Length: 475
Image (cartoon, rainbow, N blue to C red; front, top):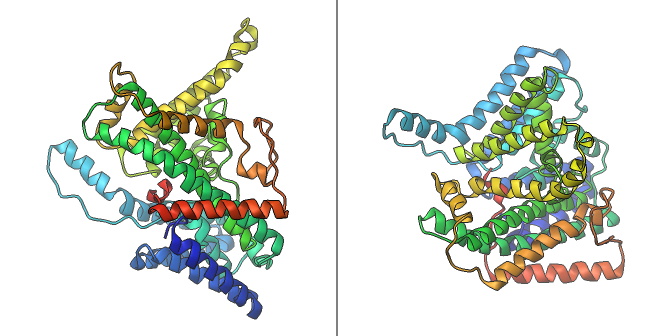
């Protein structure tokens, strides 16, 4: 059930809001239980038998967390983390491991047919963070229902944000989950903004990007103009797709009174790769930093070890995105970018005449170019097709892309770079001053009318055809 589908928009979400409100009239924790059951239904809509995996994971990790809070046993912590990782490895990486071993031995082995449970990467990381935080006693005391909702809450279950227990359990425990007019209006408006971003922008860019990449994957040739247009379109597709999901998750959470963390903050405005990873998938970056990079030693053991730790973190972060070596290549590219970024940051540019001024001019275009070039293996992940796509980028012959495609890509880039993001418009965070346009949402009749118009447009677009699935659903 995709957020941008009719069954979600016109059936599931309205019924869950109504049911939650009615359940709250009876007792607060009846409404919490209702949200948990609704979230499990949402998860089971994709494949009902995998609900047992999610429920078992929730029960097991909650019990381990309670034990670690009381006893602080490092062997139990190690076993719990290993069990979570083993679950993820089995379902997500078994086929890759068998294929890699067979390829290295020159053998032909049948690959195991294991269907990847939806969102296993997200709820596994979320619960690894919980057991580690329980060991360090930084989690908040809460009931099993508090914890179950923290993990299963349907807006963030499928594609994040990767929420920490102490960020949301106080809201649940202190009975802040309820329908409040001001939160409802703001949350619904944020959700509609994300919905429009998904179906009007992201899916439109997908229609431009897919033919270019699919042609190359099929072994056919495209010229550099089409290749660059396709690459920019995919860069905008994944940007608006993930941005839309993040907005919709925050909006739905706010409708129910739950404040989810910002997970996306105009990353294409970044002037360095370090800044990019502070803006792109913020909660994943935070998880990798706190539960992988720092435990590896971080920057405490000298520059050389710091760079090794960065590469390990980004390689594994890339592999987290998908069971394929191309995802690890994408992570490795970003690891190299970060190493170069830190090496460059250690140079005293102010002592070189004119260097600081040149860097201020080239920082953004170099960062943007590096980011979009790394998207090639992320998207063209079949075999060595990413190399063919790179070759297409420098090809001197080929067709010219349609003027409409070029225009819509230019508009998308302008929105990314010149406009404020949803978190800034809705005052969820302070504007950083990079937007040339100033917009601020307020609860007025005009804003309500604009939200209604945007919803009508989005529903009309959905009516035209089945929406694309969110890209991060596959992770």
